[in-house]
Length: 183
Image (cartoon, rainbow, N blue to C red; front, side, top):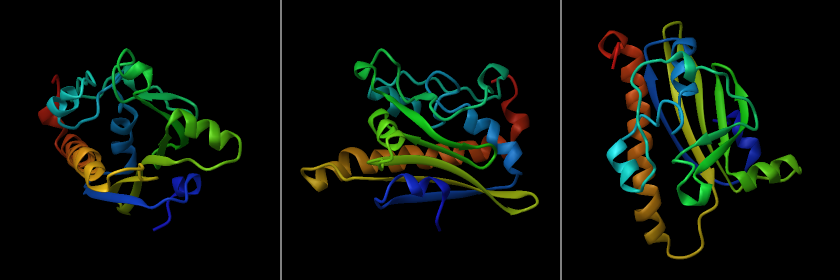
């Protein structure tokens, strides 16, 4: 299916989804909290921290993390002091309670100049019914030159494992909120 962030790149990618028994308005606050400097990535923090991302997941909604995201905002994927300050994505598009599309810093400049991004990472909310919504994650982009098997094992497999955990954790947090108060 075509999604709003697809316009930023013409490259193929991966789409993953989970059905959450909640409305988009109940899920969106968790999407707003994504980021190393907010609520974490809701993935395997031990795996994220193995690569020195310095992620600390917060399993409750916090007012200070509910500031709206705007195009041009930085979402940190790692501590800003790591990776020469390049462990981030820039918000390319926000449709509240519907879409959050992120790109790299160079890609954000390409888009601003009328070009295409080399890659995107997006989260979408699509209602299935009154009380069920698909949380969709889509990543699209260039393949890195070099050994395809090495890239697959070093990037694609860990990304799949971590992104799947993010989707499943958000589902759990939304569907079972009583279990996460005060955590």
